[in-house]
Amino acid sequence: MASFPPPMPRTAFALLVLAAAAGALPDALRAQGDEAPPPARGVLRVLLPPVWWRWDRRFGEGTPGSVTGALEPIGVDFGAESLGVAQLPFLGPSDSVLRTITRLPAFSLNLGQADLRLNANVRAQPLGVALGITRRLSVSVLVPLVRSRVEAFFQMDTTAARRGTVGWNPAYATPGSLDAFRGQVDAALGALRTQATAGPAALRAQARAALDQLGPLLCGLYTVADGSAADPASVCYAAIPVSASPFLPLGTSEAGDSITSRLAGARTSWNQLVTAYAGAGVTLPGFTAAFALPSTAVTRDDVQRFLQDTVLGAGGDSLAMVLRTRLGDIEAAATYVFADRSRFRGRATVTVRLPTGMADSDRNFIDVGTGDHQLDVELGVHNDLALGTSFHVIAAGRVGIQFADQLERRVSPPSLPIASLAQLALVRRDLGDYVAFDIIPTWRLDDVLSLGVRYAYFRQGATRFSYRDAADSARTGLPASVLDQETAVRWMRIGVGVTFSTLSRFAAGRAGLPYTITIGYQNTLWGRGGRTPQTSLVYISLASYFRVWGGGGTADR
Image 1 (cartoon, rainbow, N blue to C red):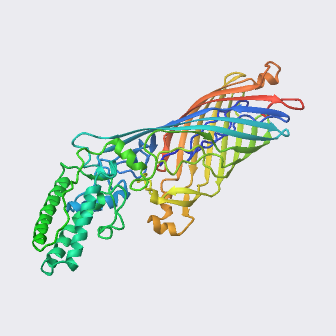
Image 2: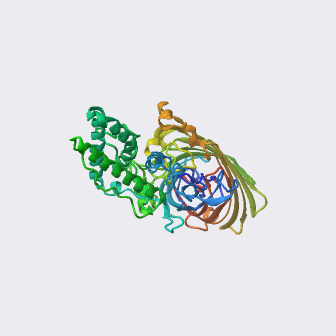
């Protein structure tokens, strides 16, 4: 799908307590990170931080009639007042052949007014474990199970003023229904070709003229009457570009009237030829089979079927709900506490993110994956400054370096999200590196309860695409760099969280189990890039500590 959220910064929420893992999605989901206080030497920490993301709008860029950064539906690129070649370029051959057989230069294939409303949500249930190796060093692993869901509400307006001017081709809806017509066209034009070169000399010029006059129309009708593609053995195969059309003009439309009247004129001309050749002792084949035009406009189900067709359509999935439950990108990290003073504490974390998640599918136009499915490394620094006994400020930052990979993608600009199967190519993808920082003022209400407000900023460079096979550039007709458009991401987010922690009481011998629980909410208030979603998220995080060996505290605080 053209609109996916970026990752969320990973910093601590309070000095002695867990700041909830609060994130959002990049092009595919990342694990939400490890934000609990690192365990002390010999202590095993178990982290369960479920989080829910939701978005149905994005901060747009370049959308006609909209200013940069304005909120717009994430399905805006799929809608159209008149769905046709402008939105589905692979309808071009059908549009061309219909213009030929109607002889209407201004004809444009119009499926009608389309509207797609999308609502995306992702639920992640990571399981994390961390082990304290020394007083300052700990290692951790976070394994996320991700459920992504995109609800789609696709409609075609059926009112008289907004419905399309074409309907489902009978030969496409019911293969073989126009075979009798095709057979008679092929026989008639084949006979004319023979008579133009080897028939009665007095009638050869008339046969050649009739072939020139009737050929374009009848071959055009022959082509669109085929449910797949023209027969190479037919007379019409080389006459016009081979392009069966899944749609035909409505019988009651101007284009439909033109086809009907032109076909009636062709039958009259043919009957005149039959009479003339009969007088010369030559019998021409009959041309009486009917050619039916659709009587009803294209419906939503027709468009859905067309998008799934691998020959004439997009060769993808329909615009219906997408639901996936898969493993996300697993994270392995090492944390080192470089400062541990009464008023200042700091730690640095190196994280390696593995390509275990599932990227969004190249067959589905609205999909949200469960991971980036590529390798990257992140360095994060977290600083905690106490400003009194009950108030402190956390300042944290992180930098991520993302390594290139390769995958199959349909090469098409973001304004044309539905691309045909012919646009599919193997590309090299280099996700942009990113930088982020957080400021978190935190109030400690008592020895177990804390309240924090979080401001987060995130910036990621544009993704760079290139073909693995240079020949694909000519085949698709577009450079791979069109995929770079609207992949840079910037956003700001604010949120609030409440944490209950027994770590201090456990250290003082007044609690039997050391754990932290955080409940919070965050919302994206500003974004740029074109596909940056306006994401809201809710999280609940639980971290428990268990001593494995040695003695002392449970967490490096």
